Amino acid sequence: MNHQPPIEIYAIGTELLNGQIQDTNSFWMAQQIAALGGYVRRIAILDDDIDELRAVLGDACERGTRMVITTGGLGPTPDDLTVEVLASILGVEVEEDEDMVQRFMKNRGIQNREDVSPGLLKMATRPAGAIAHPNPAGVAPCVQVIKGETAICALPGPPREVEALFRQTLEPMIAEFYSGT
Image (cartoon, rainbow, N blue to C red; front, side, top):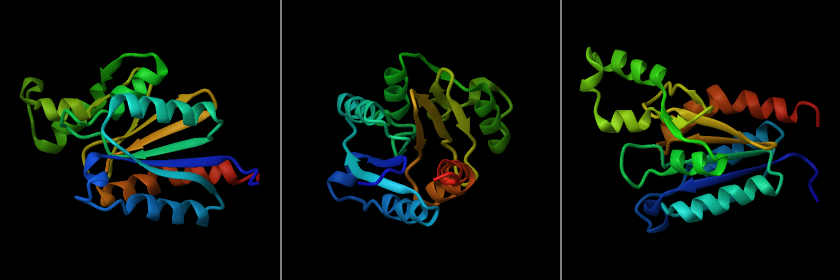
């Protein structure tokens, strides 16, 4: 039995389950985590279903998972439910991250806040109290929350963005988790 702090990876999206696209993110992250001396206990693909997401992610926290990493579900469409699920698990509201909105406006040359599209506003939401780490390779941030002893880091789905955010945000966290083991 492995006694290292466990990490679990969940790829979210109906398009993964019906074979439209392949989940290369989980494979790549597992390799990176292993190279850092980490232990991946579970990898799974989940449907865009709010009840299933809430149950699975909540259970991961209850089982003492040190870090849960999700990919997908942070985009502008109605089936992107990750932020809402995290807020539900934490028992908090969803709020717009004004710093993120301002970043989007600056990057797109938008002068007036009322000209920001609903899709961009959705990608600038996070559970109250969450940290939104800016995405160096795209739009949707890494949304980080803590539930008990579990850090949950939600990443967007595109591999280029996953890799950039992993290197920028998750790699230092994971290295720290395993530095004393």
